[in-house]
Length: 399
Ligand SMILES: Nc1nc2c(c(=O)[nH]1)N[C@H]1C(S)=C(S)[C@@H](COP(=O)(O)O)O[C@H]1N2
Ligand SMILES: [Mo]
Image (cartoon, rainbow, N blue to C red; front, side, top):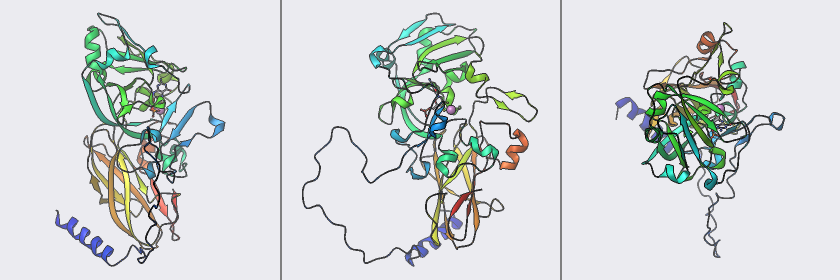
């Protein structure tokens, strides 16, 4: 262990030994059950005392639906399927797997229609991967908006996906040399349609039918979705029904009226697909009850659509000084990555912030740097450093 790290560890250790956490001893023993409990169950539920939930779009916005993951409650890097964020433009369709098929056509030698069973015969592959809606943190473009980390950053989640390589399925159809793009269409009422660059489709794009050890949840695209690792969430088309090989992008509704970035000069940038390096402190964070003085571990999540997180720095003075946080394994490409830093809250007001760097050298920008480059006309792809102000009374606020 690096000697500086060791000293830090020792000072925390002795702090804990001295009882600085203020945990009272002499508590009464918990009651033990005296009669048999519930019998086994066919499909499990979480403990009834656990109440963590997705945050739903306020009813007045029902025309466009989304729900935000409770990131501050999440343990580890896998989001429980029941708490995976949702974004759907035409509601969640009810698709019977026996009635499902995927049509692959366009610039291919053999247009083919696959059933789910056909697709499951291709070599299976697993990948832990995060998804992030490019609209995550959209409110923050106009200044501090979300009241807590769920609202500011909850349009990202991370699952273990099971499926097959799209490249294998396309090889079966025989991709023609002129093909440059893959147009993917969903079978939901919105018929969400996105163009995927063929190189990405052949590189690491998957067709997934499994999520966290069981079939995809309906909300995540049951029975089959596209998974385009590291690209904005909207391109991972759910309830996939059609793939068309094409020599050009289709410029669908979701690539023109939506999912473009209006730059300061009034021009819109299209196909900003990769998600940039980003991080947020989940504890302490707003709305979690006042912070107690004494030892506090600063904890958070970092991610990048371009690869692995290599560094997370934490500041307790609003970005004037930075300290390296510890990254917790596994550190996987295009995945949520946990970080932590031991800290003491001494009752002085302060501002906490985290800054992520990924393996491509992409560094999460300050708000000022992001706004200087992009202006404030944008809606998507906000990845600036998030600041939480801690007041003397221990309350935490988005600033
Ligand atoms: N068919 C279809 N696919 C879709 C969508 C949709 O509305 N319809 N929403 C997209 C958007 S905007 C995002 S961010 C992700 C969300 O995936 P999730 O709901 O599984 O988190 O799915 C994408 N795929
Ligand atoms: Mo999205």
